[in-house]
Amino acid sequence: MVKLIPENKQIILFDGVCNLCNSSVLYVIKRDYDNKFLFAPLQSDIAKSITSDYKIDTNKVDSILLYNPIKQKVYSKSTAALQVAKQLNFPTKLMAVFLAVPAFIRNWVYDYVAKNRYKWYGKKEACMIPTPELKAKFLM
Image 1 (tube, rainbow, N blue to C red):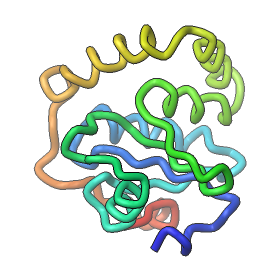
Image 2: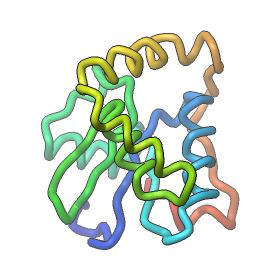
Image 3: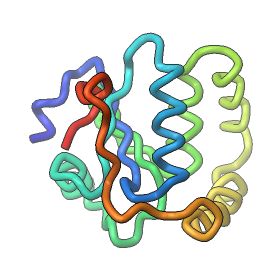
Image 4: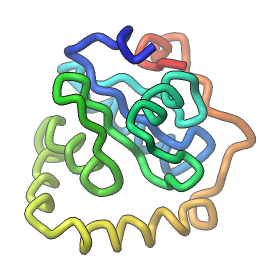
């Protein structure tokens, strides 16, 4: 299934029931002027295929993941978020300066937000259903 992903695209895997995650996906879509990203909820078959290939336990993941098929690499937590930001337009791409901060510090902050995301932002009953205009950007 992973072989079906176009090589010029990267896939952002996200918690489909998390309101913060869904808002973040919509933020990226609005700023992805070069159409670099596709999206898939962690609960989807494509996400299960990618996480299985890279031996990632999704029961222990409270993070977005960024899959780059060209580099054959999966980024997680703050590194994934900053790698995405780096590829968006100004001013969002300025966030990439935080890649200079050691990952253990960045991930401490990331983990704190991730641990509280449902309490602060809420949770949906089911994964977000994209509008017809956005459907082509989502893999299920």
